[in-house]
Length: 578
Ligand code: C2E
Ligand code: MG
Ligand code: MG
Image 1 (cartoon, protein in one colour):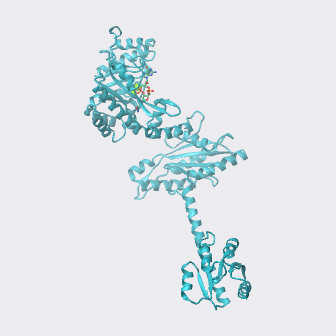
Image 2 (image 1 turned 30 degrees about the vertical axis):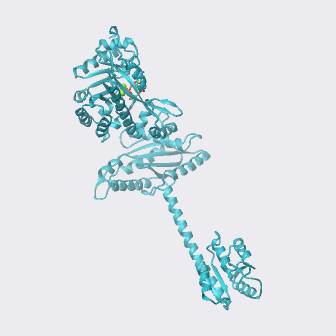
């Protein structure tokens, strides 16, 4: 039943109209004047309002104005009835938002038809509006919870579902398996065949994965090439293994891409089981990811169950990653300098630049803790560039002060080493600092060089051609090949701490030190021994004719002002020690 509000002063005209509308199945509310009309409208929320222009209090136009300005009544159909046959009067009402204006004398039937038509129209508009709203809400919900490419649940929805599954499993004492599955060759497909091919591959893979999962399982897309699967209500752990095999089999068949090209992909799967009441979504995700990382390092198409000895990424580490991102902006890094002593001259002739992170809450954090994380996240590129710039500017200053510092060594991470703009950024840094290339030494580890030895040789050759010196850092700890050592255009071998530490009492380390120094000299390389902590080690190394020493005995890594104090006047070793 539709509700109509009639605003008109009491009298026979209103009584007749109300009687008629009631007989026509309208529910009718009345108001005697303009002021009570507006409040009755707010109270009764009618489907339409009929208002007499000549009503007491504020007249019909003023009532109309108040209704249109009211948040709740603004869209209510409003029919004005007036005794004034002047057309301008009606036009004004329409221009103020009346839906119709009837001039008396008009029949009750005309009023009824007008009201019915306006209510129908308003209902249709509202329905359309509601449908559009519902559609938009559904779209927003889809965008927020589903992956657009594969139409699978995304991380947010997976999180919600997994939370529910975990609660249900705890309640029913049943376990569930959470799988992290990676399509190992997606990146190659994207780069070699283009992103549309990669998208195609992902859609087909999602389809195949879905087709071999039980109906109660949830499949989601977590990241670009990573899917997640929840298997609830597991009776045996073996079920997860069987499902993983089905998933890998499904992806082993070749994928046909547009253009008729066929492609094979390999898959790695990490599985974590819900074992304890205390386990939550984040624990399962991390454990499955740790198992996945392990699986990736094995043969292709490998499934690994999580074991407690696998390293999981801790929230602490995630927090550190975020803070690391702000570290540069907030000027929290410092470069310290560790002196290197030339055993022949007894002078400090160079130093190694070593980064330090002055964390606002945790104090100094060792590079051993944050450099690997910076490498993993790629942040080492801007951070390493900052170290290079700072060190070059500092070395130039020392040269201008004539402190006898002939070169500076800067560590270059393998991630930086593989950047295509490495050479250009080094050239630019040298140019802007004014440091001569001969005064810069770059330290690279064997492992970084051996990742792709051929291209490493090409890069080093280019750096050498500029006049920059190259040192192999931590020599003896990585995987290097002696045949490459001969081909690499390097100047210096830095023997790792571990061979120096305790060498005076360890004949094996002595043999390693002696033969490495001899080998290096035969290859025309100079040798720096790292980690020299006492005079006995110094004497041993000088006996083996090591060229340079670096270690706490010479000096710890220190601020630029501290090293300046050590350099002026030039430090000379007592001849008896050398
Ligand atoms: P590294 O390049 O081999 O640097 C030598 C490390 O040995 C330094 O540790 C230094 O403090 C330490 N050390 C020097 N003398 C002694 C000694 O007599 N006894 C002992 N026990 N240790 C000694 P630090 O500064 O903690 O740096 C650790 C590693 O972090 C560096 O090893 C290097 O691999 C990396 N790193 C430091 N700064 C940078 C940087 O700017 N960029 C990159 N990519 N890596 C950096
Ligand atoms: Mg180094
Ligand atoms: Mg080293």
